[in-house]
Amino acid sequence: MDFSSSTFLSISSPASLLCRAIVVKPVNYSLLSRTRPRNPLRASCAVNFRNIGSVSWVYEKRISNLSHILMRSSAFLPILASKRETELNSGTADARIVAAAAATVILSVANRVLYKLALVPMRQYPFFLAQVTTFGYVAVYFSILYVRCNFGIVTKEMLAVPKSRFMAIGLLEALGVACGMSAGAMLPGPAIPILSQAFLVWQLVLSVLILRRRYSLNQILGCLLVTAGVILAVASGSSDGQWLSGIEFLWPALMVVSSAFQAGASILKEFVFIDGAKRLQGKTLDIFVVNSFGSGFQALFVFLLLPFLSNLRGIPFTQLPQYLKYGAACFLNIGGHIADCEGAPFLPLLFILTNIAFNISLLNLVKMSSALLSSLAATLGVPLSIYILSLPLPYIPEGTNLNAFFVIGTAILVSGLTLYNLPKPGNQPHRND
Image (cartoon, rainbow, N blue to C red; front, side, top):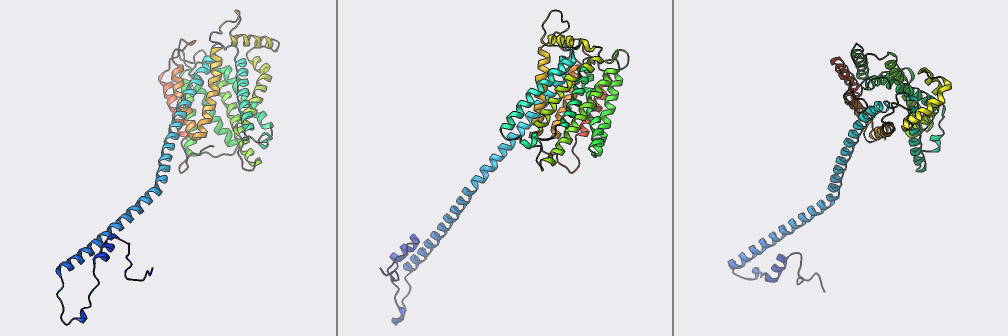
């Protein structure tokens, strides 16, 4: 077929097809001597056919634009769906962080309250409770470390870090736990969370001396407010008839000293992480390596320091085996000759489990959000635990009367903790993976 012939019909549009079917070949008017008038009917048909062709072109153009829009919309559908999914995941992550922070606050309060309640039946055997608690840490941390080693998270290079610093960490933590439990057995409940906040002051001073670290103005002011709050709260209870009346000065001082030991251990842990990053060429030392070996040496030193620590409580070295025997009997609450052990073993075991759960929850919150949020969550637990410990509780039915100066001192202390944990201007809280 000759596609150049005039008889070929284009199928580009229905209108063009219709025009070619109807329009007659034009007449050569130059051969005529007289010009014919144009037929109005044929002129009208031509105009209408031209209009039909233009309408068809516009229709085709609109269809083409609509198809292009639909194609572009379908291309954006996965992006919109991905954006929607990201928003849902972000909302889920925020909900998880809020739930983790709430759980940390609850466990923080429960840990402080159960700390005092566990020492009620173990009042005469705080070192035995410290030993059992430490062995509980060893079992949990080394189990987690074993799993992480099997999954390849903890490498051989991490396990090859020098253990001498872990020995120093274990020694300081052993002294902190033993002194803290010995003092906590003799102090009223609200005094324990108040005096424990001296940890922040010791940590700031020791980090400046050992790590040569500089602190911002709000951190220094926060530390001073914490110190003022502790002093005011303790001074308010030292007068006759108050919550610290009849308590020897040795026990509040020993609680403050225990905070110094724990702060020193935390500074050494931070130094181990800094040195570990250098040894591992930029890789972060796994936290369970530090906690596991630190807890292992802590359990060892608690056992080795028992003769010295028990001697401070008037227990001769020759009576130490008998002390451990009676401590185990009181912890298990067996044997009729053991008095004042009501609440054991339920309260001590509940404290140990809650303490481990609190530390894991705090670590999980740091990993999910930031160290700032975890510090604020632990800070919020301070006034709540003080209030609960002032109420009549099981095995502590008398409760404690708190005067106005104690409340003011607590408010100053919490304000100082909040000010200390505020982020520096221009810096966002660092996220710990």
